[in-house]
Length: 280
Image 1 (cartoon, one colour):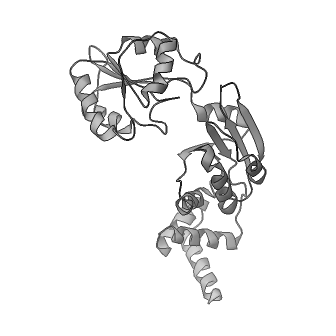
Image 2 (tube, helix red, strand yellow; image 1 turned 90 degrees about the vertical axis):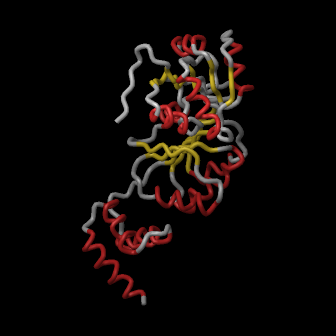
Image 3 (cartoon, helix red, strand yellow; image 1 turned 30 degrees about the vertical axis):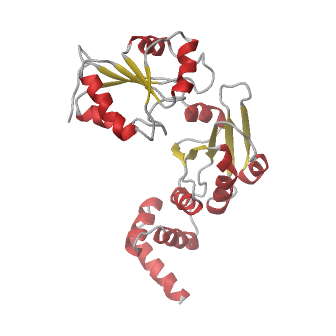
């Protein structure tokens, strides 16, 4: 296991930035952004607005999904040469649905000290006002293609915790239709433009939110988790077949469902075989 020291070693800072309101940044974050040798960001145009607002003149360089592979090693080399650097996102905390995984992975492998400067987070801010039950699962963005998206939702169908997604405005309608199709018409909460001038919150059924699908801006969508304490026998079998459709072999699907529902695997196997025999 790698171990690193913060004493006298160059540091990679993962710095949280505002998700909307530029005043939502810590004093420590501002100090670090001024002190490091270079700041890496998703979009220099977006981040330069923040830096200009606080009169930060540290050199700014892009680091995003399209150049992550080639840029990560160059950043590591720059740090190893004795330079502290900061990684920021366009909004919120780096790594959380944003670029940075490759860079942190290389930093760990190169024994480079890494620390975080905490900041605002869209999904935790939304959950605070959502009035949805614990626990919660933060999933990030669902796949854009319908079948892939619905396969993902099928894997989440019987989770009892609240499900938290990020979504783009142009995909909201398709995502809501997939949620209704796969999960059912559940209670949902939508937060848009958090901390900004036109911030809005919606508490309603997924079908009702369909009428609001022309909304714009950054969005967090929270879906209430599965609520039934005991599945009907037919539902258990349906869940097994959903797992098989996702690519599992029958035995593996039964094991997965047994673990998920805390059932005896052998008994569930017998019940499923009997059910399939009756179907033939």
